[in-house]
Length: 250
Ligand code: URA
Image 1 (tube, rainbow, N blue to C red):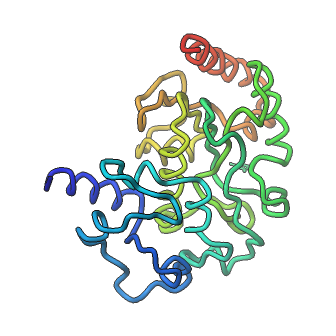
Image 2 (image 1 turned 30 degrees about the vertical axis):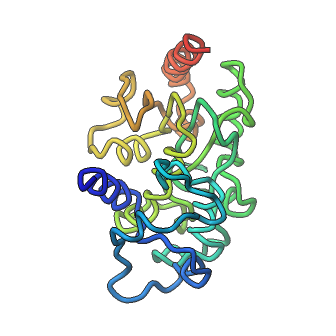
């Protein structure tokens, strides 16, 4: 039993959950967490029979009870966990697509157009991503698309480590709820963030990694392809691998 609790604690620490409660006041928190933050207790893990209206039957963990809606409401409509909330972002860009997609794309952070529309990859790079998805016989509705960072960094600068630290636990939860068969991080930033490496994208792409139960296949960012169209050939190689994995398991 204590092993099970230790595993739960480790998982929750990693995904950034700092407690679980049915109290509506607690559920509305997050804007200004109390100093020192919350700490989950053994009671939190074992005593509450409901998570946000979802019955948790004995033997079924809360991890299985997590949902995309719950993650979105945990972030909240006006997240203030990092400084991006003061730097001009207009809304949270959570993610879009099929909640049980077998293929998930992960980008860096919303750009100007995404910030306006509240949806990832809808600008020029996004239109190219849509074509890449269609090239392997799928539609945007059949895959899931999210970013490491949910708010637009000013002037499209790279996200900073404290911003990633605050935001990536939500991406981990999205991945664990969706349970995709294949994850494609787009570009250097997403690939390095997920794999926790500083290896350049040129070393990461062309390889396949095991990641949270999925095959992770890094590829170039569509914005890079707009500047370097000849790299589309490598992306196509990567996408053929993705398609082969998905087709081998229908
Ligand atoms: N680039 C990204 O990495 N993500 C988006 O949502 C848009 C552009």
